[in-house]
Length: 209
Image (tube, rainbow, N blue to C red):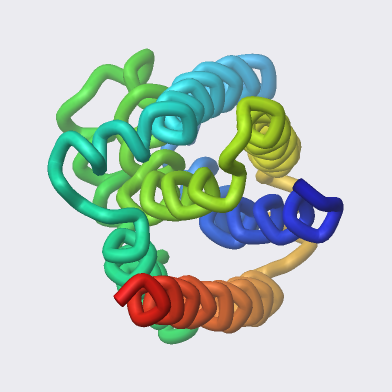
């Protein structure tokens, strides 16, 4: 475990969370709430999502082994999935899909449950974040390294919590144009990281063969 590895893991998670885009969706989910109520919803949702991702960070490889899936195969498949998400971010498809999920939740679920669905699942701990966490866990092999990964998950969750708490100010500051530009930049970074996952998976598979 190196500082570079930790930084790369942190960047991957922040890109997956997309705080600017998430802040705009969070505002839509919590219309009519006070600042304290928003903070409570954000804290509950992020804690639940982080705990879920920590479980996958610790037991993800065991789950894959039980299913007979190699980590290299998951790297390739996960990299492709992350690339699709990056493509959606660059062309503004992901925001639209998340907003539709948010609309369904507001009409079907009580406002007290918004922290669980759709905030924790699937907006924060969705397929992309789960895949990224399992992929990152493959590079944090030792128990000490896994503690480092858990620390990164918690740190990324704190950053996301901060962005949700100040979501109204962040949304006003960025505006539609600023949010779109930042989300696209994050999408490009995620695309590069996803390609790297695929390349690493192919290298390891070919080397093992």
